[in-house]
Length: 257
Image (cartoon, rainbow, N blue to C red; front, side, top):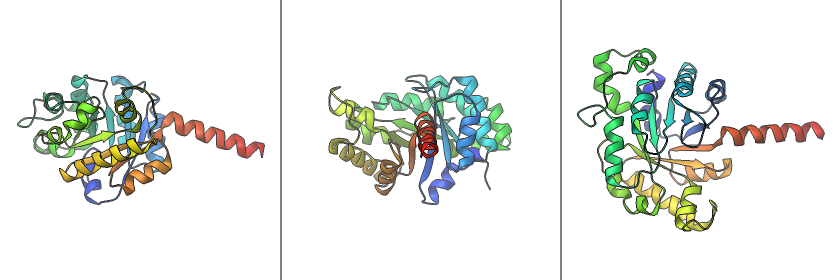
């Protein structure tokens, strides 16, 4: 059985949906609980969540020790952090606002080792967590660590096919809120509108047609199930704050009778 760091490609080949726990709170117990609760993988969010490198390092370790792969979402344009997260043992990196081929190439250059990219050598924590030797990691890391581009603007959707053709880009992640903002020119956030649902279905089809990994943020468990049925392979079911609040409210409601 492969190390959790290298497990995502095999999970994807199995053809079953990968349910992604989305974690913005920094205590490493939270992503660890998500992993042990049954999520197939966990993402640590540095863009809109509260994670930094130190909390991500702790979270990656906790999730990996729980036997699951851990992803990290970097802040916009923080491509150097992509290399640091992979060195720390992340199984992949999600980069927001990849709107052009140039954006995608720059992201891939930090996320992939030569000859595909220019990621500098230094995966000390990744080596310790993976159990791989330096030669084996160098040989195989580009295959098992995923570089996932977020494409959620009009510009990105227009360039999507070309972005996916960039060497080193393994998949695309999209979510309803930014799609809604983009398609309404900033007028509204309505992730459940037909316009957004159809746009996400189109993105998913194009990503899968290109042979890449289709990933999505599900704003509710029901919507997450619909995205899986539409062919998305890695799908989030809300984030940790939303799930915590729902659990608290359900427990109080049950207690009050």
